Length: 167
Image (cartoon, rainbow, N blue to C red; front, side, top):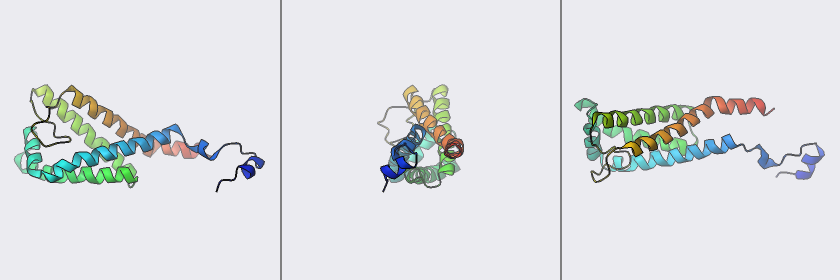
């Protein structure tokens, strides 16, 4: 239990909540947001692997042999990363992998829009009834990518800077 009287007598006028910093709050918020997004994104793909394989194939980027492999592995990787983000487990590695995946996803969507392909991005649903990938999709994924960059920065630089200045 925190004892205010003893802390003031020792010359410490800071409350226990003053040690919580904005970067730390933003870090946990980014972790939770991306964790929920990755778990939500994996759900439909895990349940409908054949439909997701069709979505992956529509991008026309992978050889046929890798389409099914990607459609089976990627949703489970997203689920695992979402769990890691929510729990804070393996954060440096999870931050790097999530940043890499989000960068690849964003660039692939941008590339296919540039090529003129009118495809479903397959981000959250394998249904063909969803809107095709567009500038909104790129903007949304760029926001996710920025959150992931922040997690990388905080995991490798920000948290170390905070530890050095804590003493």
